Image (cartoon, rainbow, N blue to C red; front, side, top):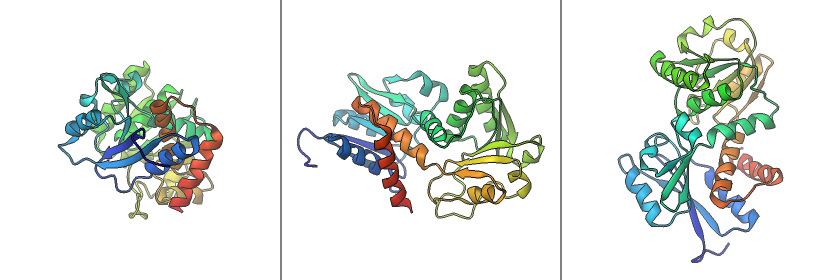
Length: 287
């Protein structure tokens, strides 16, 4: 693509951003759809977020993704926020408007589309969610709003899990999320669960780290979904598979949350064929 005065810019703000695969998603889509758009990562150091958002507006940047540690902090920089993102308390996509940027959260719908593509259902399920950070918070919302019967929210510190559970339960109007200390996982009733690994434990290069190593835990898991996508197979996934169950990584979540953001910025609809083409490119980069 020739870059000229008509080329629009989108990008990612976070700290760090050097590891990101988002440019693969958006630049591949732009080339496939014939759009004059480039996507680049912007390393925004802590303390500079508000300046960065104001600068992006001044530079007429079409849209931004937001990654750690700014998904909640960026809300104060916005002129509008989507209701879902407000309820979750986290924003990962900024869309240019006449008055500034409007914030959205595409993580939740991205995960849902990823799970659908793998045949994983949420409605009526008993779910174990590991972690209570920004990503896990969105997962707790997704599971509850999509009809999960119960979500056992396990976190190292109970108070953080209690805060997330209280907010989600209040909005849902039912006691769906049960906060627990991570160390108390053995108290989860016997049964078979969908387990979602929502922490950064096991992220490359710490490939052999895992939140829970006890075989007794994995005997309760019928399907494991790790939000991490690098490495391709985490230790959490290997332990799930070792107990005869299915396990998936978070690459399709990354794919679909990016596609939803691209659609918001450009007012287009990305076909499933195009989505699978981008997924193959992502997989090739990782593996």
